[in-house]
Amino acid sequence: MRNWGKLFGNAISPEWNDNAVSLLQPARSRLDTVLRRMVFQTVLYSIWRERNSRRHGGVWVTTEKISRSIDKQIRNRITSLRYAWDHPLKGLMGRWFEVN
Image (cartoon, rainbow, N blue to C red):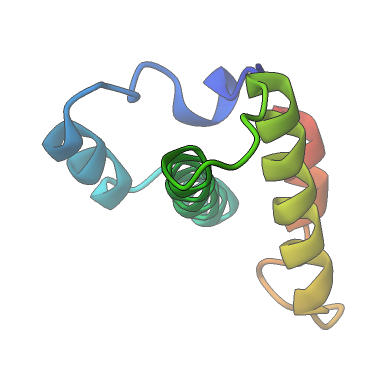
């Protein structure tokens, strides 16, 4: 499983409310705030999709494969944004490589 500790620090908790409050807190930078929310949404979607697959008789996917899928989804999303050269979030992909 990937280590997103550089991005989330000690903010990850099994409690839903703690995670929601953590996402609402400003991060060190705007890039970190955007990435934290993007990772959180992608992880939730991946867990939901895996749950549905298992519940409806689909193939179980390993955590490593889910982790790689999350990484690829985030890279694809960042790439699809096509920020202009002077946009404040232009360094998003670079920051993702730093924390991933």
